[in-house]
Length: 295
Image (cartoon, rainbow, N blue to C red; front, side):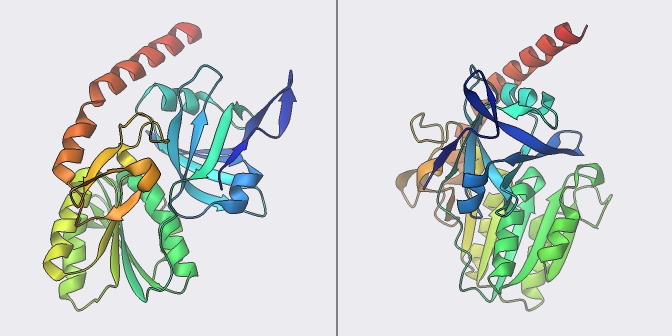
């Protein structure tokens, strides 16, 4: 069930969501803990919310990075890449988000596994962490492999370690952990004798593609989250359309989790690149607007 919540405080008859906690995880990634008790009561790993920063803003989907049922809060983690995430990042603790809807999407399957490898790449670790946490809570042995370009971009290290039986950090430049790609670490573990019931990969499309190519060689079932291609979050815009096993699916309605060996990643990568110039332009316009206000 999805809840449309407007809670906490009334301004002229309108109710909004209070930001309880805000934390910068790295220069481009921010964590916010938002008061949304009805959503927190039902949220599960793999699901997402849709928010609007203000009454004239666009809707954007963000994965639920964590939830506190007792405290009534939802944690979101977002990368500042477009106009809306720039506006969202300008809000501070004690301020309010206009709309907050969820939980949406099909929850990740986390029951019945003995040993699972969870692969997170970059800001995709914000999605991988709640899945790793849910797997651990269900009794699975969890091996987490996380990858970043460099040490300065690392997020959620302590959180991953707390829910992982084995934790491997990879950086492209070797500035932290081991130098190399997440696929290098996964291959090393598999060839070292680790037998996984499933591999879960969440991150950039290119990363997920090559994880799936590797696991296909070993016959290991692999699930990927196609959250990175979602735009509208309701299936109406068609922006998250993708081919899975030759059939058309929508990441926000049918997913976001899919069998990675059936996803046409080349098509998804081509389609996702279409929006990047517009995203950059909108971000620049909002940044220039704030510069004018603060001048």
